[in-house]
Image (cartoon, rainbow, N blue to C red; front, side, top):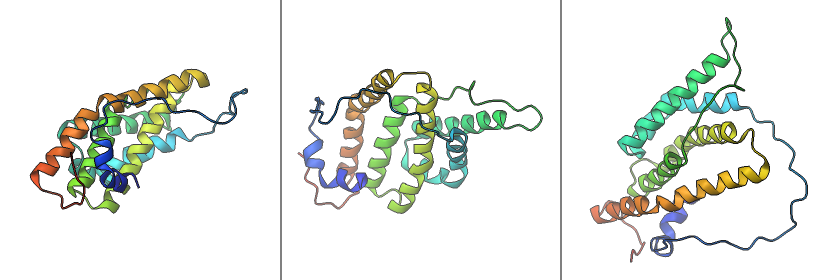
Length: 191
């Protein structure tokens, strides 16, 4: 949906340069939400396996620099998981550190949108390649927020949103380059 709507509504979002607060409706949170039981090992495993199963799609969709970082992070995820699950000297994920930086995640999402726009990878393969990337990002979020309160985690999420906002010129530049190359036959009107 995101891939298609980004194209359909390009005329609406391309020139937007800032975000603004939106009204919040509903009840104020009084109690902390219950903790979620997330299988972080599985998230790391799926991200690490992504290098093998969809690495070619990552390489086709991402810029060379972003692919290199993702490839290294995926290898790191595998190493962390291997250390935690060793039979001879089992470790723990509680002590592990894994971080997919906000900027890299924003660049990856933007690269995937541009790859779809350029038809660089068939949409079904592009979507399949996003799944391990998403798992890697979720694992990173869990590692980075595991000791935070809900309010502190909200600040963390706001920081991530800010990364997307700050990197929008990167996205727009790459999007417009695809349009200039004439790679896309589209009804999208770019102002």
